[in-house]
Amino acid sequence: MSVLDRKYWILESPPLDMLLIILPGWIGVALAWNLPQDSLWMTLFALFAIWFVDAGHTYTTWWRTVFRKEEREAHYIYWLAPVGTIIGIFLWIKLRLPYLWSFIAYNAIFHQIRQYYGVSRWYQKLNGRFCRVSNRFQYTLLVMPFILFHFRGIDWITMYSDDGGELFLYPSPVLFKAGLAVYVATLAAWLVFEARLWLKGLREPNRFLSMLVPISIYGVGFTLGDTVAEVIFPILMAHGIPYMAIMDVSLRRLNPAIFTSFLKVLCLMIFTAALLSSIESYATDFLETLNYAYRYRDTSTGQALLTALVMTPLICHFIWDAYIWKGTHREAKKVYGYSVPGR
Image 1: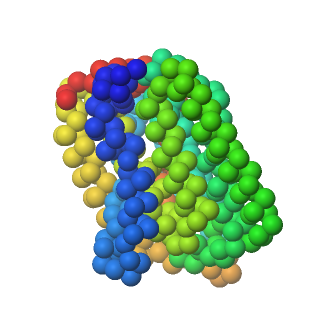
Image 2: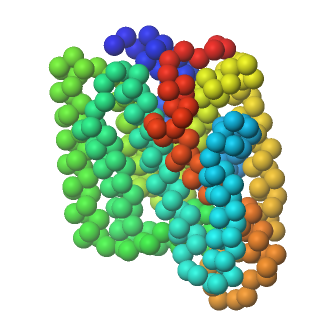
Image 3: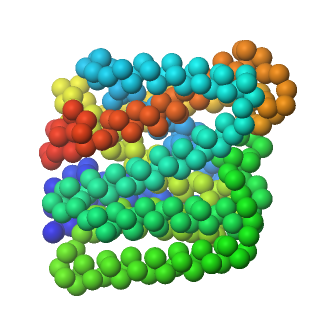
C-alpha cells in the first residue's frame, strides 16, 4: 500500500489522520511527562484533557444519535438508556450500594479499549485485510498493563471521584514483576509478528500505528506513571480527540447536505464539547456525592438526582457508542465506506 494514498486513511488524508487520530496519545505523553507538575502549563493541560477532551467528547455523540431524527426514532435505546441510567444511579446512591465510581471507572477503560480496537479494525477494512492475530495482540497488550497497575504499589489515584478508590488496587511486588515479565514477552512477540508481516510485504502503517500508540501509552502510563497526569491524561488525549475526528467523518457521510465540510463539522464538535462540558463542570460544583461518603450518610433526593443527571451523558455515551459503531448497524456501510463529501 502507498502511505500517501488517501483511501487507506479514515479522514482520507494521511496528515489529518496522523494529527487527529494517531498522534494525540503521544502528544499527551510528551506533555504529561515533561511539564512541571505544579506549573501553570500543567494546569492548562489538565483543564484541556479533563474538561474539554474527556468531558466534552462525550457530548459529540449526540450529533450521531438524539440530534438526528432518523436515528433517534430508529431504536428504543435512545430513550431507554437515559431513563435507565437516571433511575439506576439514583437508586444506587439512595440505597447506599458500593462501587458506583468503580463501575464507571472500569467501564471507561473498557470503552476506551474498544475504541482503539475499532479504529484498528477500520484501518484493516480500508486495507482490505482483517488480521485476527493483531486484534488479539492489541486486546492483550492493552489489558495487561492495566491489570499490572493494580499490583504496582500505588495506593491512590482518582479518575472520577474526589477521593480516589475507584480501582481495586492490590500492591504486590511479586505479582507485578511476574506479570511484567509476561507483558514484555508478549510485547516482544507482537513486534516480531509485525516485523515478519513487513518482511513478507504486508506493510500496513495505518493499522500498525493505530495499535502502537494506545499500546505504548498504556504500557508507559500503567507500568511507569506515578501521577494522574502521567497515567490518565495521555489516555484521555488518545481517546477523545480521535473520537471527535471520526465523529466528524461519520456525520459527513451520513448527512452530507447538513455536515458539508471537515472544518465546519470539526468546529461544531469543538463548540459542542466546550459548551456542554462547561455546563457539566458547573453542575458538578454542586455535587456532594463525588466520593464514597454516600454509603455512610443519607443523601438528599436532590443530590442523588443531580448526580444521576450529571453522569447520564457519560453512561449513555458508553451505551450508544456500543450500538452506533457496530458493523451491523443499519448505517455502517455509509460510515465505514470510502469517500467523504466536503474536503
